[in-house]
Image (tube, protein in one colour):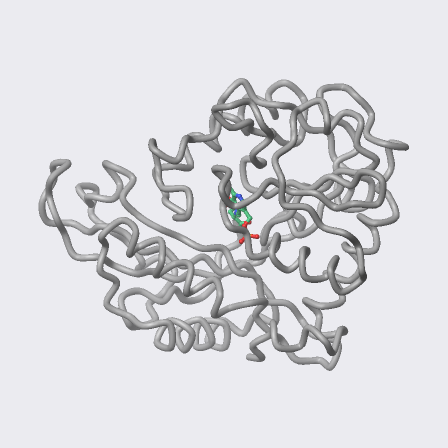
Amino acid sequence: MEKTRNIWLDGSLVAWDAAQTHVLTHGLHYGLGVFEGIRAYKTEDGRSAFFRLREHLQRLLGSAHILLMEVPYTVDALEKACLELLRSNGLPEGYVRPLAYSGYGNLGVGAINDTHVAIAVWPWGAYLSEDGLAKGIRAKVSSFTRTHVNVNMVRAKVTGQYVNSILANREATLAGYQEAILLDTEGYVAEGSGENIFIVQGGVLQTPPLSSPVLAGITRESVLRIAKDFGIPVLEQKFTRDTMYIADELFMTGTAAEVTPVREVDNRRIGTGKPGPITQRIQDTYFKAVHGGEPRYRDWLTYI
Ligand code: PPE
C-alpha cells in the first residue's frame, strides 16, 4: 500500500501516520466495523471523478444501521469528506476506504462504544492483476461456504465477516489460483471472496439474486444496467457450480476487481479460455463509464 498525505478521521484531516487507534478498540477485538471501497478515476476531460460515491456512502450507513451502530455523519457530510480528502492528497485517482468502527472505551461482547469514522485513500491498480483484467484469471471453488442469512448480515459490509473471505482467498491463492468462488449453504454459487459473479450462457447474462448470501455489489448493479441497455437478456437466478464449468463466459465484478474475466474454474477451461465477447463489451463500457466517456452513465460520477 502506497502511503498518501492525509486521512480523514472523525471530522478532520490528519497526517497519514497520525491516524492511530488504541489496541483495546472494541472493533479490533470483535470485528464490529463496516467499510466501503470506492474508486476515483481520471476522466477523459482531464478532471477526476468518484464512481457512484453516494451509493457507496449510503451502503456504508445502511451497513452501520443493520449493526445498530450510530454513525455521527450524514451521506452529505461523508461525501464532502471524500471530496476534501482527494483534493488535499492531490491525487487524480485512487481507492478510497471509508471505515466506521466501534471505538475504544469498553470491551466485552455486550459493550457499546462510540462509532468512529476514518476515510483513507491510496493508489490501487488492478486488483486481480493487469494480466487478469486482459486475459482472465484462474479461480477455484472454495472449501469454505458463504454465510447463511441467519448466521450473518448479508446486506452489510462488515469487517468481521471478511474472515470468511480471507480464509477462502488464502486457500485459493496458496493452491496457485488467483481467486476463490464461494458457494452458499445449499451449494449454489454465491460470489468471490471480494467480487460478485456472472456467467454468460447462450447470450443470457446470469448472476445470483440478492436473496443469495451475496453483497449487493454496486459494480454488479452497474453491469446489470449496462447489459440491459445493450439489450442483453439478464437473469438474476441461482446456478450450480457445474453450470460455471460449461458457461460460455464468466466474469467477476467489484470496485477493486472492476470487471475481471475468469478463464478457468477448478481446472476447467471456461468457453474458449479467453474473455468472451459479452464480457469484453461490458468491460469496455464499464471502463469508459468510470472515465466519463459514456454520456448516458455520467450521473454515476461525482467530479472532484
Ligand atoms: N462481494 C464481496 C464479498 C465484496 O467484498 C465486494 C467488494 C463485492 C462483492 C463487490 O461490491 P462492489 O464493490 O459494491 O461492486 N469488495 C471490496 C473490498 C475488496 C478488498 O479486498 O478489500 C472492493 O471491491 O472494494
